[in-house]
Image (cartoon, rainbow, N blue to C red; front, side, top):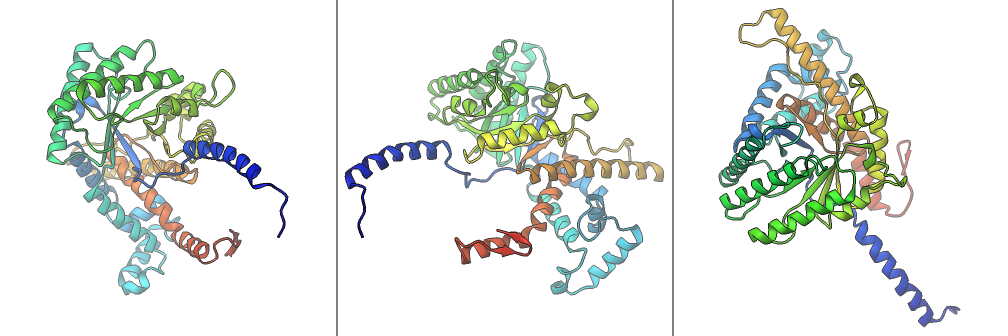
Length: 423
C-alpha cells in the first residue's frame, strides 16, 4: 500500500510532537492510585495529644450509639432509600420484617441499605474513626502571645513523636501554620521551624507517614515557593531526606480562583510548590466571606462555593492533586448536658443532633456529587454523618458501577446502553 509522507519527515514531526505530549503527560499524569482520606479532622494545636485519635473516636462512637440506637432510626435520620419519609410505625414494621428474613433474602428488602450502612459506620468508628488529622495553629488556635505559641508548637511536636512511637497516630497527619502574609509570615515560619526541629529531634529524624504542612489563605505563587525554599533549608539543616516535606494549600479567597490578570492561578500555585503539593483544600467560610456572603448563608452548598469547586476541579483535574471540600459548621451537639435529663430534654437533644446530622450529610453528599471525595470535620459528633454519607453514596450506585465496568471490560471500545443510560 502506497503512502506519500517520507519516513524522515514523519519522524521529525513526531519527535517534535513527542516533546509536547511528554510535557503534557508530566503536567497531567492522572489520578494517583494512593489512598486518599475521606476527611480531615481539624483540632486546636493546644489540645492535641498522642492518643487524640483514639479518644475522639471513642467520643464519636458514643454519640453514634446514643443518637442512632438501631439501623432503622439511623436510616430515617439520613433519609436512606427504603425508609425515607416513613412514619415511625411503618419503620418498626419494616425492621421486624427485615430481622425475620433469611440472610439471602435480606439484600432485596427495603431496609437493607440502612442495615448495611449502619453497621459499616459502626465498624469504621470502632476501628479507624479518624483517617486524617490536622494540628491547627491557625483559625482553630487563634492569635496568642509568641511565648504561648512557641510552647504549643514544641509540646505538640513531642506529642506527635510519642504517638509515632506508640503507633497511635491516624494514617494521615499534619499541621496547619499561619499564612505567609506580611502580617503572619514570621509567626507561621517560626511555628513550623520549632515544630519540625522538635519532632525530628524526638523521633530520631523520622516523620510520620503521610505527614503534610498546610499553608492557608494562599493568594500568590510566591507564598508557596517561599515555603518550599524553607522546606529545603530545614531538610539540609536537619539531615532529612530531600523532598521529604510535603505541603497542601487552601483555596479560601476569590484571588485564588481569579487572579488580577483574569486567569485561574491554581496551576501556578502547584508549580510553585515544585512537586511538593499533594492537595488543595477549600475553605468554605473564608471564601464565602470573601464573596461578601452574610454569615447566615455561608454554607458549603452555596452557589459561590459550587463555582469555586468547579473552577478548582477544572484547573487541577488529572494533575494528581487531591481536592478536599470544607466543613459544615453546625455541630451535632444537644443543648442539654448531664446524666439526669428529663424526657423532653432528651427528645430535644435527639432532634438537635439529628437535624445537624442531616444537614451535614446533605452537604457531604453535595460534595461527593460534585466529585469532591474528601472534606473537613470539626467535632467527633460529625464523624457518623461523614461515614454515613460516604458509604451510602457509593453503595447506592454500586450495582450500576459494577455493570458499567463489566460492560467496559467486555466490550472495550463499543458504545453501550445500560438501562436508560448511554455509555
